[in-house]
Amino acid sequence: MKKSILSLRILMVMLVAFSMTACNSGGQPGIDQPFEAVEVFPTPPRPAGQDHVLELRAEPIEKVSVAIIGLGMRGQGAVRRLSYIEEAEIVALADVVPANVERAQQTLADMGKPAAGGYTGDEDWKTIAQRDDVDLIYICTHWDLHTPIAVYSMEQGKHVATEIPAALTIEEAWELVNTAEKTRRHMMMLENVNYDFFELATLNMAQQGFFGEIVHVEGAYIHDLRSLLFAEEGGYWDMWRLRHHEKYDGNLYPMHGLGALAHILNIHRGDKMDYIVSLSSDQFGLTAYAEEKFGEDSEYAQYDYAKGDMNTSIIKTARGKTIKLQHDVASPRPYDRIHMISGTDAFARKYPSPGIAIDGQGHGFIPEDEMQALLEKYEHPIVTEVGEVAREVGGHGGMDFIMDYRLIYCLHHGLPLDQDVYDAAEWSAVIELSRVSAENQGMPVKFPDFTRGAWNELETVTYYTTE
Image (cartoon, rainbow, N blue to C red):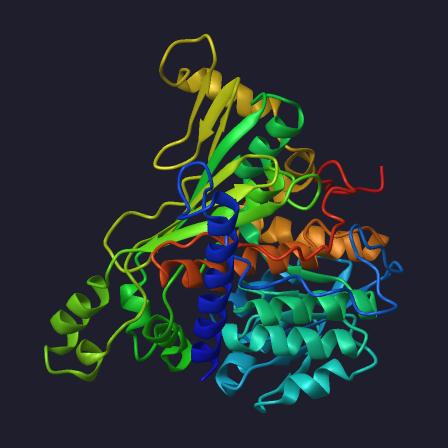
């Protein structure tokens, strides 16, 4: 029913846009009167009494009391990493699988930390959010619970950090924005890739003008997840992630490729994502894998998977930059986030192998030793500060620890978080916007302005410190 209403809305908006363009051109739209991007999701007015939360500061917290909800693949790692941070204390652990809670408690014991309150009920996250001794709700559940838990927790006066994606729909994204603005609570999406060493170095390069004017960037999430998607044990709990492939097309997981690039482009800090064009291939990989593993007559081989194997999306920004994003988890392609930045003076790319090219120095990458010297020169100050510890603690090479460290550091000192609710909303919005575009033959779809006009009040992304 909801999809039918959305389809009708899209049709009506397209008809209006077509009629206006035809009237302006005196006939059929053509080269002189191009068809404009469709505003399927208009930006609603800000509720009375609210203001934006760009660079929000909250009261410093001497020791951040953390409740971790969801103790599967990501939650277990968070328990260990946060145990290394002196300014954080884990006071509650929740998962519907009791063994996961027991495992997390054992991690605390192994780290010399006191046991936390354990919860295993389906809605125990509400009880946790109501506790007076919790400062931060750290969400690592399946995707469908991210927004409900985040919204409820902010309403209870808690700061929130959630695994990605923060929202699955534009409606959910607005719920996060409006609740954060109303409650003045921090809401951060845990995009760990922003804290990888290469990504941080290129952010530093961009902010110091190394690339000149950045024109185009590319990112991706290409990761063969077929064995995990179909794992009845040891994969995603209750195979929840496979169900999203059954129901939805588009880019289901844009944040890993987009997050660091969005900060490099100063999205909603001097620029904004304007519209998106998205196309998906047909679906082949999941059916072929299911047939080989379970048989042609199996339940999984008979599913009509909505998600095309490869989704490719192009985003145009208000300042004229372009962003290319890809998503493919159903093929044997090697892991790839691309992370490419192309400017008027220089070029950098991380995958399939790191490389930097500089204007005036030939038509290829500079030598390996020169690239390493540049990466050392532009090492981000955060890496200089905590990189050695991050490598020892680990978590995707250390970026997970830097992410957690920065989250607690900013809450402890009362500083704006590196990622805010508008990052969470905008990056997550690609999920539904790409789906609408792909389902309508690549129709250009406008982004809502989650800042409601405040996107150009700041000049750049800032990762704050006390110095």
